[in-house]
Length: 406
Image (cartoon, rainbow, N blue to C red; front, top):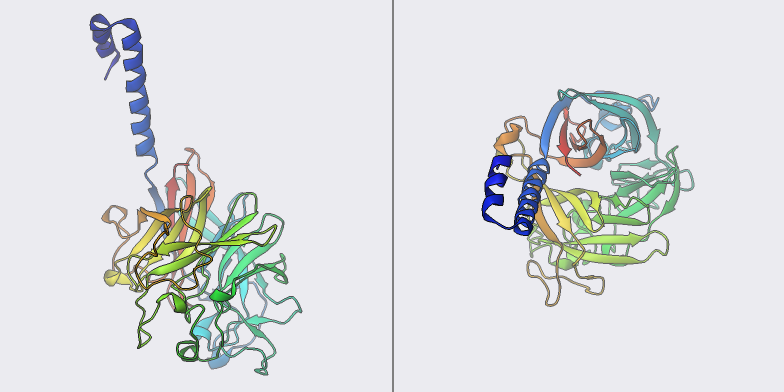
């Protein structure tokens, strides 16, 4: 509608009515423009090789002759550090799925995204992790207490700056959320309710399943996600899959459950709340979670397929503000929502396999696992980075950059 159209309107309506009509039109235009602007926009993508040395300074080889300083798996988690192009990225438990004593670590990197979509990553520092007593944290499944291994097992999957110079890192083995100083030494730990913990941790994942374990996280389905509020007071974590007691498995220990628990932790008083998140399919899993606004988050939900077989690689926007606290529910059903419970609401935010992005195809990775907002771009939108985890295999790590209107 142009100004001459408003002139015609003035000729047939009273001045007050015209003013109201013009206001409604302008408001409609503004809402329409905001809706268009809010649509995420792909800025660029890049494949970054990882079979190069990191900055740990470690020498020698791990079991099987694997280099101890291999820079891989670092797409498991990513967090913007709040200034410039500086990020922390986290490597997971190392090569060979927990069969090596790979020293757990995180890295400081610069990721530069040009206006034309070119992405470059520079590795600046590598920091090795140890527990509060100085014991090295390693990826080995066998590094349990009383195992004789001079280390403790740890499977880092997510990293977030605390806002006070430290980092929160999630451990899928525990599951746990530990706090580390900038040098990688543990300085704290957040409370995790007992229902999340396996009764009998074991070096063999099969021995962590029923009937030996009847509660807690499934093997390889612990905490892979952390979000933290801007004031640093609330930490939110989402399980990768349902707890064993929440109808997760059938009699053959096949995954059939869809009801996940979302854990909210108050840092000041250590109180917790839990919410229900429903997977689309029992074969899907949730990975990173990123703070969006009070009660709202972005969540990665994906399947376990790669290449042309990939079907679910989604960023879901969720809202917990009307969700029911399910802390007092000891066991959830496999698929149904318990009476009186309102789950978190979910809606699709970005489908990475949408043809318009031109990302899908033979090279699309299986494990989309990291997500973080970055700095504000020149057009006022926020940079959103999404990363893949190559599991230390001879595969690239993918970085996808989107622009998102606040």
